[in-house]
Image 1 (tube, rainbow, N blue to C red):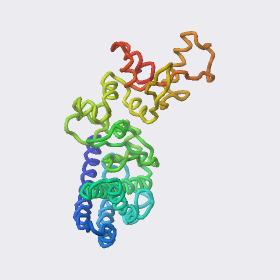
Image 2: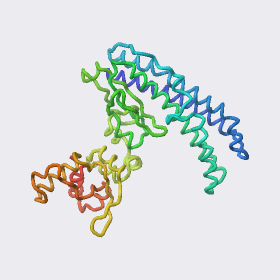
Image 3: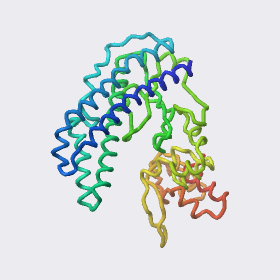
Image 4: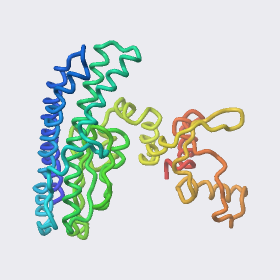
Length: 344
């Protein structure tokens, strides 16, 4: 059963990718016809064709949602019924951030001119503008497809939520979300050209404990396990995606989510006469690091045992790279990774 739904999700992903590729190919052909002697003027001439190329594939991607959701429900033995059907055209012609699609498609032209003003050659600026236009195109088609699935899920009461399926190659932020379950009304966090997709879960599947899983770690698609994804990468690729220090910490057994999330709040803190790489993430009251540090302070007699909520962290939460820089041995590094909440 779990394999069936994952296969359905991957088939849907491939169809979505074909729609995005069709749009990208068309936009690329049109974009190359822009006259470099009159960038804005010639762009205006092809603008209607650019917009229509993207809209057509946004509609195509959105139109796949109902069949996809029907297949998932049928595979899990749920009733294939909903309060309504997706209207594909309602998800086309607008950008993900709510602006007009045409306005977003003009952004690469602005970037083209800005690059030239900054001293780039015409060739380099044109290449950067084309890359931006293609990234926008692929993202907007994918977002229309994801928006349609989210809308369709809301109209089907047997669907309780969705599991995030990660497609390689993926960024570190996406990898740590692989296999995570979200509510039916939770937004789908993504970055430009994100390949991740929803895998809807029904009440029947959740109640019986059925959940999509995969142990495929070599050349597969549709990862639902962050650790399996990480282990399937070469050492060099681990360090490219996660950073050398973060990859090392994960190989030592550190919690991948803690390591990656820590980078969001990274800053330079002062300790004594020096500066250290620290993070504000994961140091709030109730966090793993907060609780470990409070217990350490109590055991060391630095604060009374009944300090409770009055406890305040006084030591910055060090980043993994700072820990490795300061640790004199592997044992000390592991001890520090545990103290700062990266290892349990």
